[in-house]
Each structure stands twice: as structure tokens, then as C-alpha cells.
Amino acid sequence: MADVLTQMKNNSELMVALSYTALLYNNRYIAEEVIELEEIVDKLNYEMGKKILSKASKVSTPEDLLSLIHITEATEAIADAAAEIADIVTRGIDAHPIFKEAMKETDQIIARVKICSKSIIIDKTFQEIKLQSKTGIYIFLVKRDKDYIYSPKKNFTVREGDILYGIGMESGVEKLQELANCKPQI
Image 1: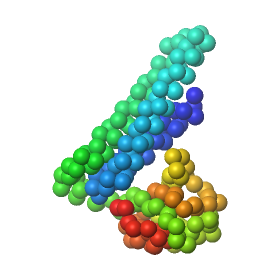
Image 2: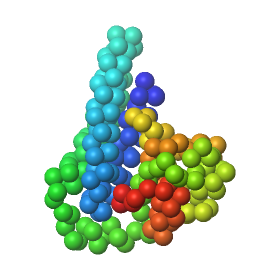
Image 3: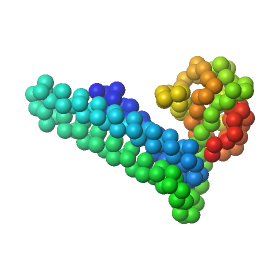
Image 4: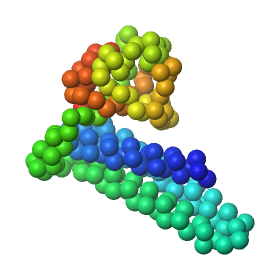
């Protein structure tokens, strides 16, 4: 049960960060990623509900499971709210200028970079590349096909088609983009 709840929490946190980034940069790619993640959270929510129900008959006081139900509902609500923010971008509605100004006050941004076929970092680990020290971008998520890899370690090997999500200074995004050898998507 804890693994499903952890996945829900991780996905909903990621969705919030990505939805604000999509809105700030009016980036449809990132907004669509949030929508995909919302579908995953919906499935995890269903799985969590089944697990909670199966435990109800095995505990002496089923009321003890209420906190799990509340946490699951709250996590689902956060994911839904992030998807609603992303939906603004997918429908082509621009963010209010005050929101954009407020978001630009932060020192760090979230970057999304796809690894293309001619990238010099394919089949290399983050440690070999010294990715964070070269770019100043911390990679917190990699999307590989339909899988999400959270907090990839220094021995993580980059593959063609990987989509890297990182946080750092705006100046590092261009360096990361050069290494990826793809057109910017932010």
C-alpha cells in the first residue's frame, strides 16, 4: 500500500511543478505531460482504493483506515488541480501577467529536454557526463518511454529519446540543450 501512496505523492508533486512551468512558459509539451501524469494518478487512486477496501475486513477497527482514505483523496485533488492548470495551456489561454511576474521572481526554473539521436551523452552516465556541474541543472526526473524514473542516481545511463526534467538556473538550460542535441521545448 505504501508504494502506491508514494507513487501518488511523487506524481502529484511533480504535476504541480510542471503545471506551473507549463503555464509560465506557455509550453504545451509540459502541459500534455501533466495530463498524462493525471491519468496515472487516477489509476493509482483506484488501486489504492482497492487496497484499502481489502484491508478493511482484516483490521479490528476499519475506522483506522480513514486517514489513508483522506490522504489518497487529498493527493488525487492535488493532481486534479495541477491538471486543471495544465488544461489552461492546452486550451491556449495565456496566464495573467501578474502570475508571470510573480513566477519570474524565483531564481530557478524547471527545464524539459529530450535526448536526440546525435547527442554526445547517449549511453553515458550522469557521473561520466558530470551533468550537474557542467550545466548547473539538477535532473529530478527522467521519462523513458512510458516510465518515470524519479531522482536518477549518478550511475543512471542516458538513452536516446529520454526526456530529462531538471531544476536550476536559466543559464544552464542552454548548456543542457546543447548536450541533448535537440531543439528547445521550453
